[in-house]
Image 1 (spheres, one colour):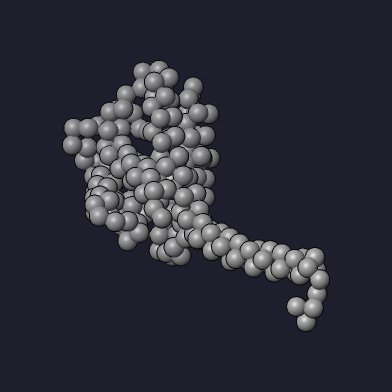
Image 2 (cartoon, rainbow, N blue to C red):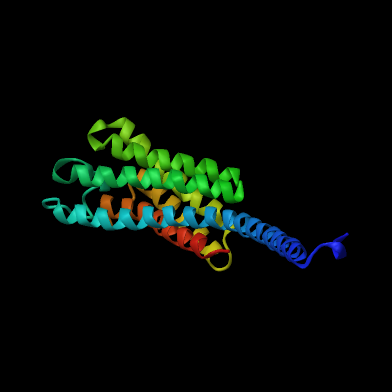
Length: 222
């Protein structure tokens, strides 16, 4: 039948066949690209949230301490920054830390479905938000929120090692153990000459450093 058609019609049919084959191949190609990028994007977005959470916390805590009259990183609690002249800045920092952690958790769960880490990150994020929503002058509820963030932040660092490669997997375990060890000493009132504020930072900083490194690793992964 094809050979009996005039040249113009044969050209149109041939052109449409080529166009159809091209579009079909493009669809298959784009489907693969979108599917692969979906997994990649989940990890990248998660990493960005964790990286941002850690960086903004360290920097804004430093700025808050500089603006707090007579503040000492050795003798003052971190949460002292949540009352007085720096209250708005510090409490907002903690809320952003918690929300960013929860958002990062969501995308990590989408990428890996690692339930243990998901639960630990939820508790860490909720604890951090609680620190900002219920400042130091709220008493017990603030203490519970801070303990929750510290404890489950350290456990999150340890748990995340299964998603990381050498040597960062061992570094995450080390940072988690350092935070938990410092938490035990802090509760026991053993400050090793660092003061109450110094020992509290030995809990918080390893967790924040883990968050930054974990975020960087996720953003750089394929």
